Length: 163
View 1 (tube, rainbow, N blue to C red):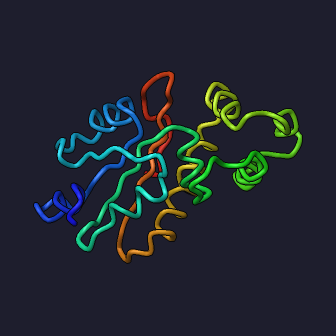
View 2: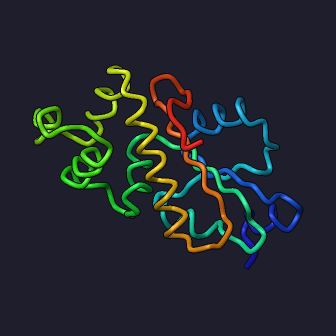
View 3: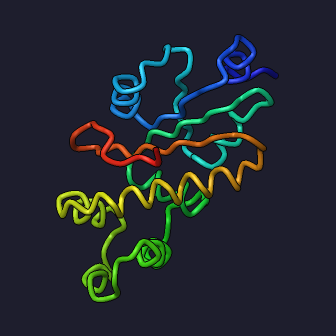
């Protein structure tokens, strides 16, 4: 059975965007100006969604999503990321143990405002780069470039990217 993404690629689109929510779609369109036929909503399982869109001729795959979904890609998991996994990921980006200690019993979504309003954009970019690397490795398609764009639910804008 041919999926919409397969149809788009067979019609000459070698670049598609998997987005989470209308704000992510709109912010990506504003910056990249791809045709509507290149955009596809992510399903509830982002890892499965990404895998289902990979076809033979696809060369570029963009992911435009919010914090939790970007963490799912960076950790390459279908389930909600566990706090200790997110904290370990943040440590790998250069955040020290002392800075993370107030979040030991927090919700993973409490970390994004801390990073965003604290202007820790280099950390957000590192998360996007980790998501890019994990997606490229997990999808195992040679010469597929994955670009990850983190969208703020509050502003509806891309606030960090792997570009």
